[in-house]
Amino acid sequence: MPRLLNVRPRGGGRLLLGLLPILLLVLVYLLASTARHAANAHDKILPTIGAMAEQVRVMGFEADPQTGHVPLVVDTIASLRRLAAGIGLAAATTLLLGLSIGLLPVVRSVLGPLVAGIAVIPPIAVLPILFIVMGLGETSKIALIFVGLTPFMVRDLASFVAAIPEEQLVKAQTLGAGTWLVAARVALPQALPRLIESLRFSLGPAWVFLISAEAIASDVGLGYRIFLVRRYLAMDVILPYVAWISILAVMMDLGLSALSRAAFPWAHNARAR
Amino acid sequence: MSVLSFRDVWVEYGEKIVLEKVTLDVADGAFVSIVGPSGAGKSTFLRLALGQEAPSRGRIYLDGEPLRAEPGPDRGVVFQKYSVFPHMTVLKNVMFGVQCSDRRRSARDEAVEMLRHVGLGDNLSAYPSALSGGMQQRLAIAQALITRPRILLLDEPFGALDPGVRLDMHELITALWREHGLTILMVTHDIKEAFKLGTRVIAIDKRRRDPQAPHRFGSTAVYDFPLEKANARVPAELAHLAQPAA
View 1 (cartoon, rainbow over the protein chains, first blue to last red):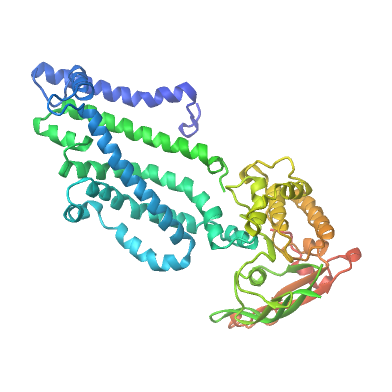
View 2: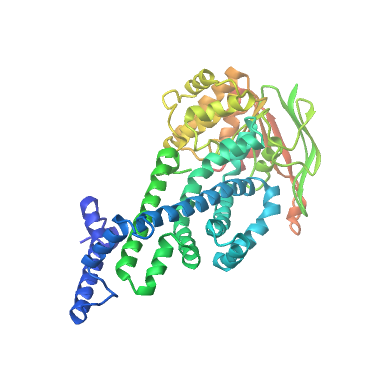
């Protein structure tokens, strides 16, 4: 019998092992739900699979008679728009600031302390400021995601760029490259896969900021809907919505990972750098 | 004619003196090896020539012109590692230098020819991480030579390689030096390598030591041997330095 440390599951076995806790969790839920419904047929806390499927049909495939829209569809589109705008702005700013802070000591001296200071402010604490300054519309929600992600991502990318071996920067200069060419052809291409990785780590926080902003002031969006139906203890809507959010988040993560592998194969070799 | 001249160069970090009174000339076409114990300032010496660092006192001239304290295309360099760009293919790594000086020229043929010359003709589209240590150094040399620098600076270029690979690299660099009429300044801690490759070996070390304040005396060129290639052997005075390479 090999030591536990040396037991490596492979192929189908690994897939099966990964499914095991998920199936177990589903089983526990079904047992608990059945037990609660046996005691009270109108239980709302742990809805049956059937009740949830019915709500998925109502929310996801039928137009609301008042608005004429399918709630899940309009909520998803609204939320994804806000996420894309916030994350996109954060990524663009990160690229610009992270590259210049990491590569240019002058910019690091000027902006380093400011970014470090801003990064420790809890973003939710500035949400009221955003609402006051930008109103309750789309701008303040996008701004919260932007404010929440950017300082962390800038610091990560700046320290990554600063850690590019000095040998490479000197080498590029001996080949005739100036500041601009070193930034564009040495630092930028190496920073891009790191930016994608940092975006993947930021997806979780981005969703937190999105749902928070939608919960407080919104009339459409996945977070808005969840907090709306909470008033009626509508767990049969909340649980499918949460599952849908996790599916969206996993797809984004896989998408970014695939993008990085396709665009930057050199960054994914076993012996990187 | 001298390509690179040091005139009474001092390097001090606060109280600590690293190099003192270094005066020497590197002749056109010379292969100068610099040896010395660890911490003697070999690397500082090379950083000066590269322009990564400016001397505290004294002057450095390249082809008679005062050297700007910035790396530039007139000096090529090969470091022990991290010399090549991991995000570019072998071919792009070599083309980079030509494209920096002339944006319109693709320089593909030139780069392919240079890569064939160093033995990487079959690896044009590979990324550096797929190459062995010796092949990466071949690439770094090709990359440095494509821009035809006035002087090639080598910083322990073969220090991380296996002994057999190191011998191949010795042959390659000697052949390139002869064919291209290069001027080379190589820092190494392997004294046998220094004497095998160089036409001149300079040892830098402290001339005096003060046990109470060891940092107050810097290193300078303590030995300077012009060599005939025929009898390039390690002389008795330097035998104590000829420890096995780390």
